[in-house]
Image (cartoon, rainbow, N blue to C red; front, side, top):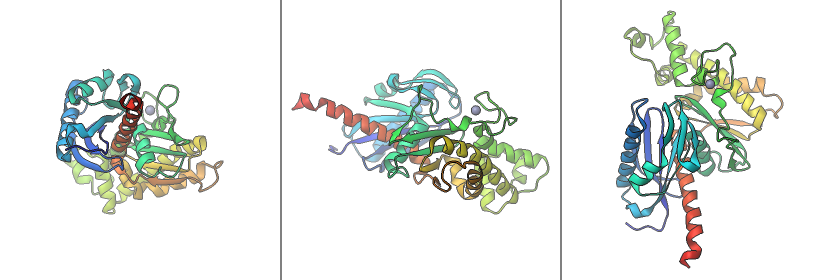
Amino acid sequence: MQTEVPHVIGIDLGGYHVSAAVVNPEGHLIGISERTVERFRPPAEVLAILVSAAREALERSGLGHEAIRGIGVGLPGTLRPTEGLCLFSTILNWQDVQIRDPIQEALGLPTCILNNVHATAVGELSFGAGKDVDNFACVSIGTGIGGGVIIGGEIYRGDSDSAGEVGHITVDPDGPECVCGNQGCLEALTAGPAIARMAAESLKLGAQSLLTDMAAQSQPIRAEHVFRAAREGDALAIKIWEKVGRYLGLGIATLITLVNPRRVILGGRVSQAFEFFGPSLKEEVRRRARVVPRDFTEILPSPLGARASLLGSAATALAEARCREVATVPKTV
Ligand SMILES: [Zn+2]
């Protein structure tokens, strides 16, 4: 099927999953494919799954290959986007991996890559809670924690594409070790694995909870179980989310003091539990961020949810496609 409207494929690669979707310029997802990925698999294996998810998304969209102008891939780690390289990623356990070229060759479409948290911020800017503001920050809480800062309507990348790493702000100098090697990072205290660890430790000390049976049967507890238990009114789970909110508030107060954003948008799977950690987070921010006018910054969960990174990757691919088309106009006139 021929179409004049440019579509792209947006891809979100995480520690445990790949999502791919055909996206139109309004940010609507037309065909979606989701795959799980075993943690820490070699790059070639993960990229093959990613390519197959992209093909499936295209098939489900009902569009032909000729309707697609490009591909945007968001992934966790420190990247060199202009060279298509992932320099290192603790979440994927990759180092010096060429991402762009194999995808481009396999799918025959121009491909760009970007850090998935930067992608989240671009997603909010293009289609989400950042559409109507020039200065905002995104904090994405999942297996790890990332951040993206939009200043003057543009992503602030920093000198080496690593700006906004809010997950690695120290919030407890004597806290648990973080994957980055520091102690007491926000990520080590509030990302999914940290929430699961907090629950497991409390249960080991004899706390009574809806999660007690799971622990007794040696079933691994994950953050989503702590979320579900809180929804059922479990006192231990509710207490854990309050503690998570306080730590998040410490980190976000620092971010607000430094950047003075209009909004802080919380994304990632863990932010689904905002109703449980939001109140203590906001309270902590009010206590700590005292220089920025009180209540100036809105703190809210992302309206795009877990799709923000995919949509931002798609928005970046759309922008690059438009640039290429503008650049080729004089030759075709
Ligand atoms: Zn860290």
